[in-house]
Image 1 (tube, one colour):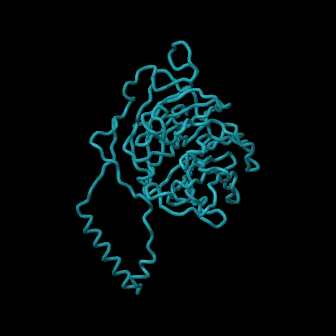
Image 2 (image 1 turned 180 degrees about the horizontal axis):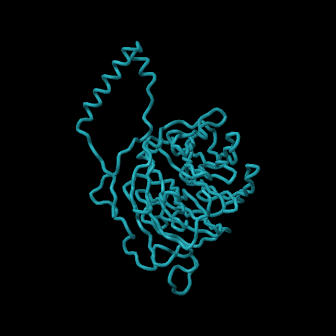
Image 3 (image 1 turned 90 degrees about the vertical axis):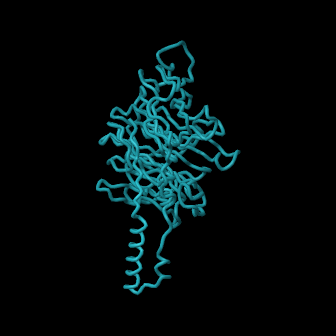
Length: 387
């Protein structure tokens, strides 16, 4: 069943706007504040404030067209004899297919699953909102708007939402009472670029990436000049709140995650967007959570240029699942790698894929943010019980 978001137009809105303006003018006059002083206190809108996609023929929900069991959208890198599913690829879970579960977004990103409520939150960046997909009945609703053009989201060990905001140029935490705490918005006294994605380790430290995509224009944030000399990966200390650089040699650091044993840190490098000679790959580091440091950087997996990988997650066995998009349409979707970096298989999605996460009560449903739509597919593995 398709659940649409109602769009209402109030014919009285111009009248209400004039009344509000008159009241504001009276208040200014009463307090003796000059017009110039009042204007100086104004602030710019928070990026693209939302213009919902309206279509008379929306992308249909349900299994993708042409799906049958086993689903041809699942492709194993290991070729073998015919079987009930793709050989050696853990995306296969039996009588299932890749489904489109929600649509109507401008750029879907940053999915995070909340098991207690059986819902998924994800960003619709240009529309300046965080969406909520209820897994039990398929209901779609707006969780927060404006969202400061939120991008990546994750959850900490206390069940609180951690959000990277483009137009806010900050990382925030939504407390259990709904209030919002600013976790990081500056480094060395200068504003961050546009935090993109985050992960939380068991000690409560928040690790996040800070490329410049959100300040490159007015579509996904507020256009501005970067104040940080480099595009860094940062760590926020869980006790002191100090923000420190842990990696400073990325062209554009993007998606980020950790291995189930918290001994590896994975970061997507999407520098290819800035020039054809720049890399498009996933880097892996040895992670020392107690010391708050990483070491021994190496390339984990190269992406087929001109495609890039934007988001990344691990399952309980340490396999790495990542998004693919922006290049060859035949590569759009999800890739799965062994912990040693060997390609296991692909999930083909008919749109550029930005990010993904595991959800469902058994953590075996992979949610995929693909441009204008949210997709889901059951797997034969479980996502790591880490954000």
